[in-house]
Amino acid sequence: MESSHNYGYQACAHRDFHEAADKTVYTVTIPGILEEKSVMKRDKDGKPLQEVPAIGLGGTRSRTWTTTYVDNVVFKYHDKGVGEWDLSGRQANVKEFHTTKPMYEQKQLLVQHEDMSGTWTAEQKEIMKQVGMKPE
Image (tube, rainbow, N blue to C red):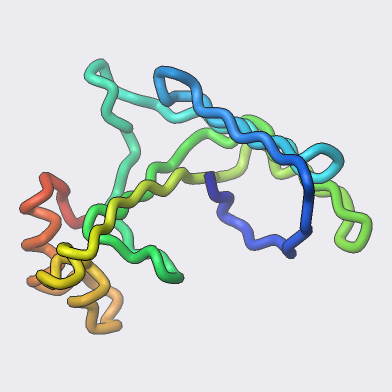
């Protein structure tokens, strides 16, 4: 689960991530540092309602990377250096991706076709179409 904000890194020995069996509720707890609970709305078939294709930053740029907007029910961050933040109710998202070596070798990753224009290229749109996604 990823919040729409960037936070400083804190090392911690214990953290707990839980995904409900029906994949609608996600919780993350790092005692004394982070409390997060997000709810994903799904349709009657279980498909996320607010899912969009995306290319993320970092090494996990994938062919089937999606971002799903979720209701950020609880988001409380405790940091002596930064302060106490309660961002409950603000936007959050869950990102899912699947990448394999053959996808890379066959140039099936969205990032392999980006042109930094800020819009999807024809090649990216074709990849999204092949996996049943709509570029928006």
